[in-house]
Image (cartoon, rainbow, N blue to C red; front, side, top):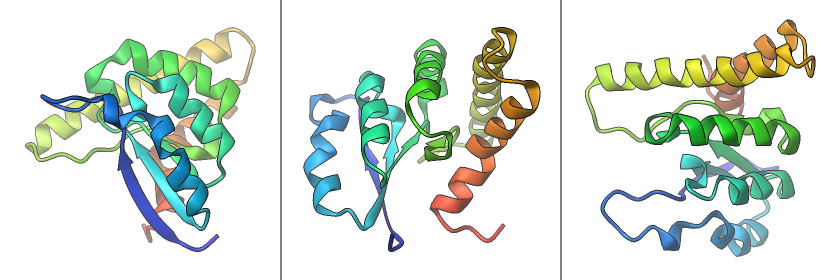
Length: 155
């Protein structure tokens, strides 16, 4: 797959009509440009299930939880719980942002993201669906490996 990246805003839109940002509206674009990699921002909130199906159905779609932890920790945890059954773990970006805010707010969002990811993965471990090592590996992928690979970061 050629490395042509594109981020797409989906879901919640500040102060506006967000109905035009449903993840499913991206399907014609994603199908037309199969060589491009699409980073779907905001996990489609409130349509996180649609975003999940989009991520599962198209190999060129990644799901990005930027801003999600701040918008709703419960919805984000619910989405991650479902996505673990649905979406390859290498296609989820657990934290990110298109911020224009002070760095302190970014750090606060990162703390929330780590809490949410830990909560979801700890639940899987407690139910015997994965072991601790697998959970730690997934957390590392979501917070480091996946964005590094998607954006070809040399860090």
